Length: 387
Image (cartoon, rainbow, N blue to C red; front, side, top):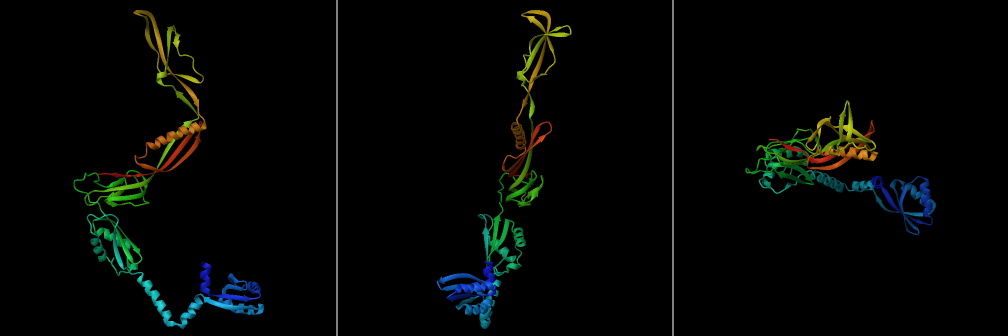
């Protein structure tokens, strides 16, 4: 496309070459660095080519040398248009005036359209049209002289029923897109009285204003406690604020861990005192391999009796719990650490959220302990209403 445009700027001619050896003419032209392109055989002895019009004189000389016939079929490009218009100055002036007029008229506003984004209940489009005309948004206005952003802001301030105004150009038509504020009836429960604040640090994704004035917009970063929506004169604000929130959870799991048996599985040892020593009667069965005994309580003494007969002996009872060491594989340790990290994440996030991205990293710590760090990016509602 660029090559064609440059050729048009320089000007080119379409030539028909006939004779006994058109190929010889082409070879001679290429040897002398003459740009010949778009070569097409129309018949067995007729060749069509394009060449820059400045090279036409040399091509004619080479045609005589090679015995070829050279005919100009048409001339195209800016130089030929200029020559044509120079001979017809009235036509050239008319074309220039037409182009200038078209460019000027394209900057003029021919119509203004009011486009509500939803059905209006309290506001009439004609009210917006009249105020817009007073501000300069009317047919006949020059588009380049209008500061549409400032005019949209002014229009929103002047008409209290408007919650959103956007002005766009569509050719010579000016579209004023509007949205109406929601007017709450008096009997509505005051669930939205007061401003709306951020309940956590986040990146604003979407703000849907139902009632109130937005303080933030898409792409803003907010801190916990920052104002998001301010109330109107009636003291009410209502909106849905969706934002990206990041959470991090952490968990650890060793490759070897000591497991303590449940209290219900505690074991007892019964002994009789024999001087400073104790005589084991029963209890504490043999331990399993790798099992350790942990004392859970001190000795307790009670008299030994058979039926109603109490013997002059004291039986001592000792309670203990057992534990054992368990070896985890690397995959098991990572799975345990990941489960702990996810559990801590679930305790942090809000009730309504959408998981957008998850990042999991593992690290082997000293003591053969695997640590898992999980980062979640969630989309959730962060608005908190305060009376």
